[in-house]
Image (cartoon, rainbow, N blue to C red):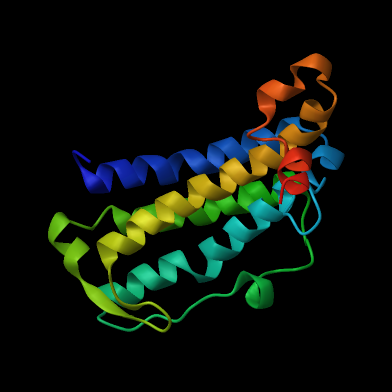
Length: 176
């Protein structure tokens, strides 16, 4: 990447607007529909991103800047299970938290990317690796949410359904 910090900042700054748009325009039943058994709905993906923004990424960045170790986060046991807000409220709070997180990144320089600490499961990690993981994590769960949102449209697309075979959860689970 030409400028690592700029690219990461750009990815992280796009995520809240995508979620605000999705939650303000899509019906709740579509946001809460699970694409398949044991798969997260779009809203569960947003809740996970909100949890990560509250307890994981900014906390880890600060720990690495302070030369401290970081602990693993298990979304199945540590994540929020009960939704406290409407989807739009959750997206708005995620956007608020992300604005705070992005302000931390404003003060980082390329030399900071080499700062390291010990992750409780992964061993020694650098701040640069963590920031790349943060951007990839955002994109992964947004893609996961959009895949969940696609399912009712794929199923009902008639003769065009085969065009979506790479995204069709029903087909994917049938072949597993």
